[in-house]
Every structure is written in C-alpha cells, then in structure tokens.
Image (cartoon, rainbow, N blue to C red; front, side):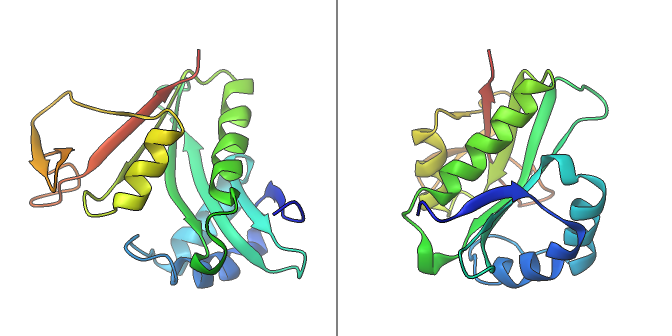
Length: 163
C-alpha cells in the first residue's frame, strides 16, 4: 500500500495500538500500560503504519538494549489481518533496522511462538536466522529455545546481524 505512512509512534497512539493488537492472534496482547510505556519512552524505535484514513494498520514496538547498545530488540510486530500481504510488516521492520543501524546497533533480535508459522516464514524471508545456542527442542518442526519465556514457554528466537 503506497498510501501507508510509516512514522514514529506518538504517545497518544497507544490506544489505537492496543486495538490493532487485539486482532493479531496468535500474538500475545499486552496490558495497555505496556503500549503506553513503549510509545512514551521508546518512541525513537517504535513505529506505526498510518493508513490514508488516519487509522493504524500496524505497529512495531522495539528498543535498544541498555546493557549492550549494539543490540536492538523487536518486542511486538503486528499488521491488521485485514490488510496483510501488502508489505506493511516488511516496511515496519526495514524502518526499525534502518533506525537502529544508523545509531550503531549491530544486531536485531526477536521471538515468536513455534505455532506462529506465518511469522516464522516472514522473518526467515527477511533474513532473520533462528538462534540455536542454548537448550533447544523441536516444536512443530521448528527449533525453539526451551523455556525461553518461562516453564513450558518455548520460543523461536531470531536474530539478524546488521553488518
């Protein structure tokens, strides 16, 4: 969609982000306060896809590690299911990568559930690599890090180097 504008999230976008997130199964939704924190304190690395109507078609919430400023992390990426397949997710990821690369990040990481085949395929197409360090297990035909998000919460961990 050429009419979509990718821009930094504004603090007041958090309510609309929350509404779009509700449509993004199987992604976990967050408490509204988490969306608010991201749009208030991590605005520099959070982006929305603004539709011609003024509504939001998707969002990416990310941040740069305070422990290692060369590492960036994508916490959530969501595109409204009604408009998927129009490269909005790709544009959000590319914008995040451009931003983090421009300020010195060397690596972007993210996680997804092993059941989320669409996301796994999407991230692989964008050049993300499955992490295999740590205790791994095969879950639904993909490599997941065992107990990554807690007991029984096995996750596919992806990274992309920004050389």
